[in-house]
Image (tube, rainbow, N blue to C red; front, side, top):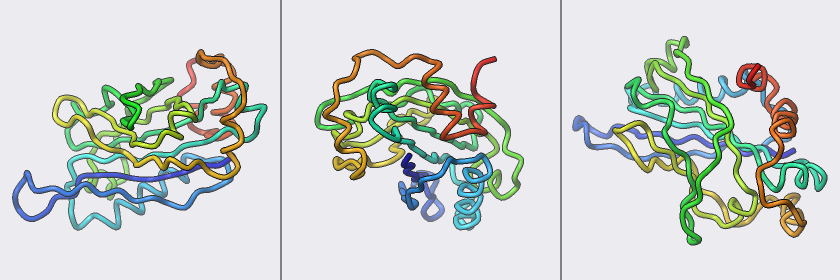
Length: 211
């Protein structure tokens, strides 16, 4: 497994409401399953770091899990898992209405598998990023990821085209050989998707998987 993480948000600048900067930060990749505590810990640290700029109108945290080997790559029909956690001060902004990749090849919609909305209980996160949270689980083709570009989401009606993360054209070294494998052109079986989710995001799998 290989997991890549980043965060993005609009940072107010000065006293004018329209004066904002789009900030993106990448975190070191990991090779272990991601618990809710780990996800929430990253968010809490970012909230504490940027609390001086509160209230930040909206933000997004991105985490991606690549197939662990060729067998999983084929079983997943060449898709990786993406978790996007969004926050907003305005409840109408979450959950996002759309996720997509913009690259030189054009626009590619990113398939939503499951999502949940929840109130923010941590006071520092709530003060900094807002009281409204959504966690979305998506499928992204590894080949689309290899085309570069950037992942975007649309927040409700107020903010379209919010860039979540820049996608490097070069895949991680252990993933590159997998792209040459023959794979089916359709989406993987939902049972196979949730098998990978349970492996990579065990806590989220419990909360997001339909019962």
